[in-house]
Length: 281
Image (cartoon, rainbow, N blue to C red; front, side, top):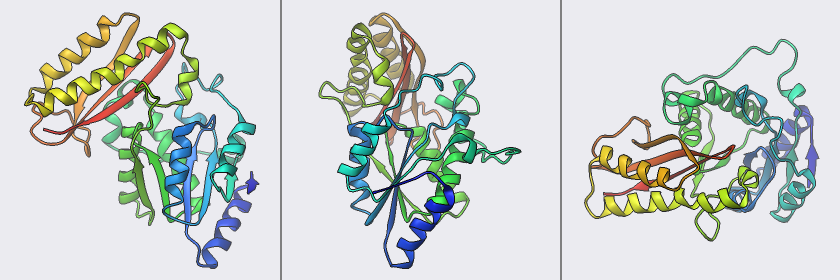
């Protein structure tokens, strides 16, 4: 397994694989890897034979009062996990190499960021789209794997890839969860014991809503109201949003008369958690 920091070397490594007829697969991450990332790597190996994992905490997707400086890191553990998954190369660029002096070109989407997380995190998806574009241009994968936990991010990347003619297959992998249902996330490490217990309310709320829809519930406003009440009743929770949206456009839905996604973002203490679940009428 190669550990590569320079973009020119990363480009050359995958170029050699391509020239030899190999298929490059890519899992972009911000490090502090967990079983969810491992599942992405295993899925990636089903789509190609040379796996690249990037580890880069991207500063342009963090707001001024977010957790860039304290974002958890464990490079040694990350590299061991990548090696165990059969990774061919780990790409570890620096912020300086990604955003050098005079950098001023960003990738922005017109509409998808104007929903869900984008409402409270202005500029976040511009940062995501820009860094993923840069990584795609350097790694040049045939396929890239993303988790469905970050549902809006996946929608943004799918749209960007389609609109900008990236010839890359985008694969979404269902959310990997803890045994009690909490979606695996690097930010779970921030949770204290009390907030960790309260965090279960997210999954419970999603499951109850999905069950209500399966049994005939169609009024999105009523479903959202019930979900909001349940989360607030847990105590110590601050809701960013609870929404029922079209899975492709992320527009609000008022009647769940076709497949929809319930997405939510909730703050427990200083930790912001997101989760989602498909609703199938």
